Length: 186
Image: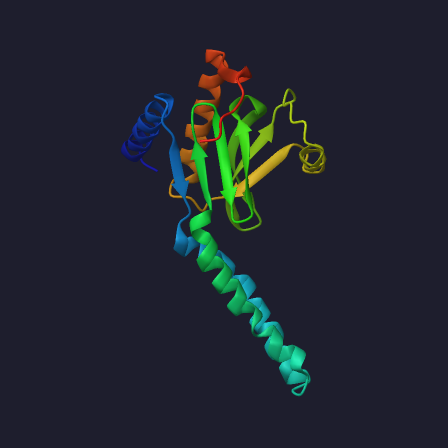
């Protein structure tokens, strides 16, 4: 990346930061095409499995029924893509998925960084040691994941810019003393 595009990205992050800090929120939606393309390998694998089963045993209805599964994947993807987004505000962020949402305070996060999960770019964040989540299930999940959480780079902002913005919001919240306030979902 050249210097002028880097400065442009930093200016964009600065503008978004100022907007969020003025008691506003930023909602990042999923890029629909990228979401559907990521489902493609699973759909193709299931179609391949169905074809192999039909070739091995043509009269077995199980092979034919497996071919219907990709249709359900596609229908699910089309109807759930609008229900997935991230809301950033001055107190924390909320990740909303098709089956629920999870909210995080900036103070509960140690750091954000860009990483890779297999072949996919992700935004990674590590819980801080001072995180006070009282939910038993979240505590178990955090211990099993070594306090590391990820979400895919599917949103309308580049992963690098999103990480820069989230780290800046986190640092500002901790410096301003707002870290101990209860989190209000955006």
